[in-house]
Image (cartoon, rainbow, N blue to C red):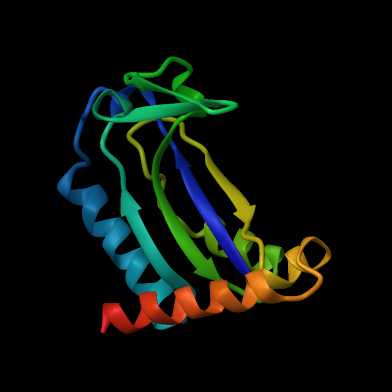
Length: 143
């Protein structure tokens, strides 16, 4: 099963403070362990929300809201996408993670839906087949 691992933002990350060389080295070592174990599918750090935007949907209307956004603790500063056997395995890996911030921080773990989770909404399977085609095309373009 897949999990999205969300590194929550802090005041420092939202201020654009870059990680120290020591922290980068520790995170690279951790990422290397994740890759060698076949856990890590993807992972990236994110710029502060001041460089981002949100799109608000209300019926047919779309409104663009430029950052920065309030409530720093609700923002995301980075992510990993992991393939693991269970939520417990993901939690065990997370416990080994270096603190990704220079201050108290938090990481959120969220399970990613599988195509089969949408079976009730897609009784013919047509949407899932199309999604599989798109995923195969995406993979082929990555090389």
